[in-house]
Image (cartoon, rainbow, N blue to C red; front, side):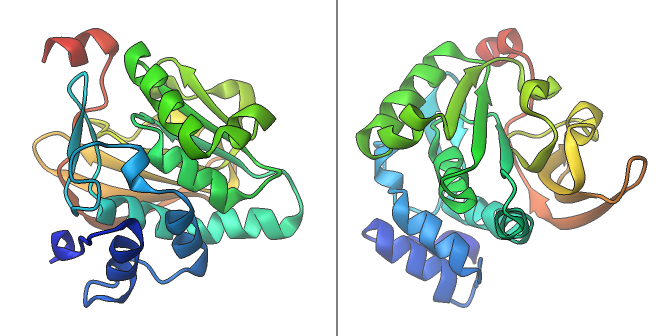
Length: 231
């Protein structure tokens, strides 16, 4: 099962996610990103266990297999943007610990613009502290930003995006985020309430999208700041 991919070190974890019977990812771009970003910088409790971990403020860092699956789903789109020579733009909604935002920034390369948006100020501060341990260069260059705000409406200031990751379950298809996808761009997002599906959403043209169910999942809800703090 996917949650048996844990390891003793970050390298162990990444190797098991790639080479075990689960084969969570196959892209070399994903491997390089996950090796470059040590999960141990982003959670103090069992960082290499393949399970979600609490990070405070009723938030979690997703299990490594979910992060690997999200990176795998976005790797082709990000790779195409990088190969085109254009500035790759990526949005991470509900950026939490900052871990996946950092992985996305590594994948997207040094000329990219990657934004993590998180509505809990404490988590924003914590994620910046996490990133400064080994990735302060990405913050200093502006290649990676962490913004405090309502991720449900995205971050239109840098739209359109080549890739969007949503780290909490939207009760329905998030139309505001879809509108911020570039034509040819891709989003991965958990959708649903009692039953949730992890969806891949591709923008075909100005009016059409294509959706694909990647797996059934259980995520915390994508909600407002007050509701999260009161749960």
